[in-house]
Amino acid sequence: MNLLTPVLLLLALSGCSSEVVPDFTQTCPDFFANPGGTRSPPTVFTGNNYKQICQKREITYEYATLYDTTNRIPVYSAYKFEGLKSCIRIDNWYIEPQLEVLGPKMISESSMIQNQAINQDYAKKSRPMYDKGHLAPVHHARSQSCSYATFTLTNAAPQDRSFNRGQWRKTEEGVAEDVKHKCKGNYVYIVTGVVPGPNTLNNRVCIPSHFWTAYCCLDNNLKVTDSRGFIGNNINVSVENKTVSELEGKLTNLYGKGTFQVFAGNCN
Image 1 (cartoon, helix red, strand yellow):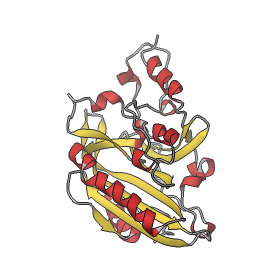
Image 2 (image 1 turned 90 degrees about the horizontal axis):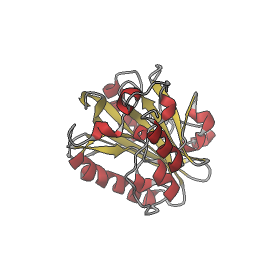
Image 3 (image 1 turned 90 degrees about the vertical axis):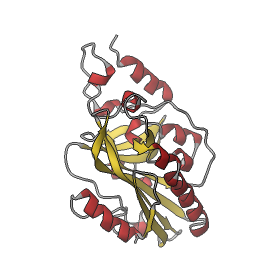
């Protein structure tokens, strides 16, 4: 038996069956804000290493991810926030088999999986100070099923443990509280991403230099009622609170790939 088989079997039993697609705005468009009726996804970088994934559990799409197979971390995950559901956490993390070319030979999981992180990369002996940092977080999941779907390694990046459990956790909770009061009864769209840093985890997985998130609220007429952005270094220091335009300017400089827009410039 190929040593990868148990991993794929667990993935199947979990009900997680996400899809790598040519254009996630066509396959799972509902996770991207549409101010004025115009679908407004974040910038999609060009290059064969950037894969668009519609993250799915059972038959339901739950959120969307742009994934970087070179750095083995996501660029961002986009989702619709529908209030806090107090979902139960699990600790079973899964891979995305569609990112790999699975051959017939019996080789180890670590050598088979080339285009994404695996659990072994986060083993304590590798770099004990890093967590699997969710981009689409359990705290914001719209259902228990959705919370299960967030536990894919294509939705996680190495996050400083104290930051993940400290300032970034406060940021996730603060965003939920903000939209509860400022966007009550409105449609809320959130994008959370990372910026690649110079160091790696287990000599395989890029450790982000920054984590960022932004939200856009639309009323029933699809008019923008509120938006905000946040970004912090991947250490346990305070997170910067910015307008979406200010966040986009900073991300443009950090990514260095031309203009970067979180909501296609339509939620500022």
